[in-house]
Image 1 (cartoon, helix red, strand yellow):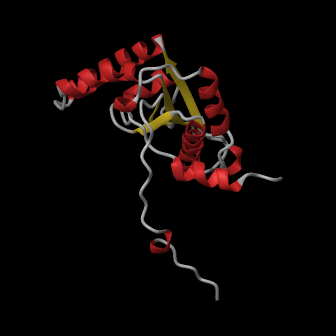
Image 2: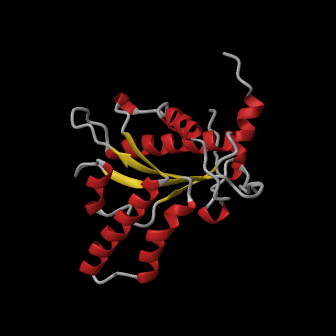
Length: 196
């Protein structure tokens, strides 16, 4: 195999979280989103459980997602007196700023005894593959773990069962500007080499 490693390094270093307010409103081609999902499917997975589960919402599907999350948020937070009107309104309106929103789920395989943390790690590796694919195509994306992410009552809507987890929402859109360069502290501050 002969890969362009310089290009790969540049894609990885160029990955950014691009938020909804930074989207132009243009529609991302469904074929790009499909490629993002195909690349997600190549994430590492212990015992080949392939625990990632995705739902893609776009066009009218974004309205359906917004209505569901608004209603489930209202139901859950009114029951525990934590309802906030501004958060509710955001759940109803913000999805329409994205071209696509992909729900990120982790499905447990009861036949294989893989620790849950490893399954969650595999799903986040799949998300990173989507991030890098979006970057390579010039598409903006970010992972949100807010809103209804940790609501047990939301799982069924996304095809998840009791032992599964909803881990977030991956927003996709066309950036309306060039993305800034990244900023990381040197890797030497975070690594200790042991060679003897």
